[in-house]
Length: 452
Image 1 (cartoon, rainbow, N blue to C red):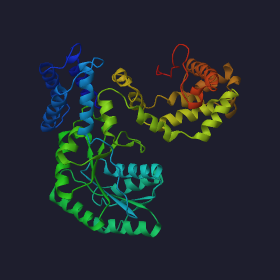
Image 2: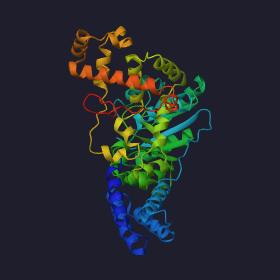
Image 3: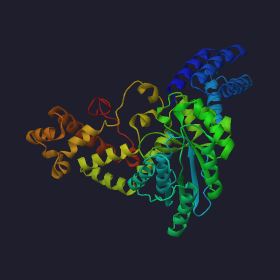
């Protein structure tokens, strides 16, 4: 995300590179380029102008320390103002009622139904809440069925009334269902339209009036740029929602919607959708997003994702196995599956400072682990537990069973053995206890296809 904007801003800061001090001339030249970069990213014109004016005012008022170069100071000022532009700090949901009601609003195609399921899963897994999904989209074919399937997939019940065509009535019935069965959160999925119209607005307003939701969230496709901002303003003028959810942010290389919405509608961005998986919904952190826009990575979010998959008891069990040199392919497979649960591989890699730029033109397939998984799953339970018994005939059978070749199987087994030895070496050290990565002789082992 934001690749184009990141590149343009980086080029803008090069104007100050080598300059001994900040002057009105070199700041004006830099910010002229920054404003163009923002406009190219589909940021609202008034927002872009106000942003660069503020940065200029702060930059000219700064005394540059000897230890800080003008370019570095400008990056710091732009970073802070980007964070402020997007809201400054993360905004939590306000869910005080029992049951708390969350109303989802937006146009067709923004991803409201999928987002309802993602939000329910996030509240269930991270906030220990008991959500109920309510299907109020009575117009779009198969919308109710889609929500039912999603609910079944993530283990969250769905209330639906196939006999009724009155979304207000269905929403109220869903709230009563939650009260009767002890659910503490109700997520109401409403119908959208292809464009903002009076009928849509009246219906959403009627549902909001009847349900009195704790949170009304406007769901918008980040890839629509300024159209997203304009739609957000129209919805806010009519229903006065509490926050915005940007979907498909992982496919938005420009970022105009994320940078403009807060200023235009004065409502916080609360969540961002970052992929197709049901777990791909993150709380929006403006400072972290500013880090990523300026190519600084996002280590905090990366660590948080890792912690969500981290099981302390399992880690202790693995440490004991490693110390006894008993780490096997079953453990290796479990580690791969944990990494996959953390999200898109390229997105995870881009959270590491400096890596995003290096891999921007590299196509990293989300199925990069499939070859490894196929090889391991083609082994018998005994072979996975005792890799030392994998002789040539067994390896040939595994290659045929996994749809790979003997060279790939040999490479994986060799790298697994190297990894196991290295893990045993570091397991007694502080790095080993913290789960840190060892330094592999000759670099990190490669996955099939050349990916490390």
